[in-house]
Amino acid sequence: MNRARTVAATKMEPLVGITMSFEGDTHRLRHAYVEAVARAGALPVLVPSLEGAGLATELAERLDALVITGGPAIVDGLVGELPADIAVTDPLRAVSDRRTAQAFIDRDKPILGICYGMQLLNALDGGTIYADVEKQVDGALAHSPKRGAKDHPIEIRENTHLFSTLGTQAATVNTRHLQAVATVGSSFRVSATSPDGVIEAIETDNGHRMGVQFHPERMAMIAVFDALVSRARS
Image 1: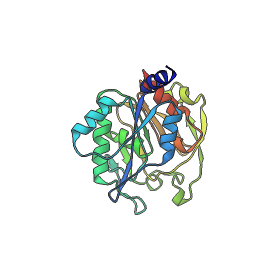
Image 2: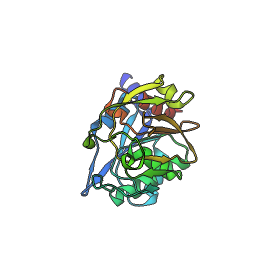
Image 3: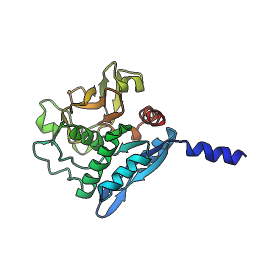
């Protein structure tokens, strides 16, 4: 009887897809993403780069939420030229991520975009992306460790879902990006910025789509994943 109850409870846990990197014919994923989703109370489902729009649709039908992980350069909505120290995303992953994200958007299912994932969500919504934020924004700080960047503070705007999630207007976050959001897509609003004005988080009015420029899976910021899983349950 106890075993039956355990199985039944497990089957009720939300299924949260996690996209994977794709380089040299190999999929990779940091375990921290899987651990964060599991700690938040969901069943992690690894989402590889897929060929065919039908598979993306099937995923969106079966899964309850999606995490779009970090990755190389976004070329959708690009402003400027990419620097030499960032690679373009493999075409298979780029196409697959766009299809999968759009399938979840069409069904208004929760999505958390992290770094590359945030930029992708913004670009899909008509926003633009700086190719190299440090060169294109006056006074921009270094935002990549390869250029000497370190953790920095962010200001979280009140009356946003991110503020409700973290319960604070200030946080210190990691930074691992060369690109950044230039103009925000029509469905999004800015929810956090860094001291130099670079956009650090965006969200839709209903909070079903949230993007963060930092990597919460590498920090003690499980609340971001808790919020995603809570939305997935509903």
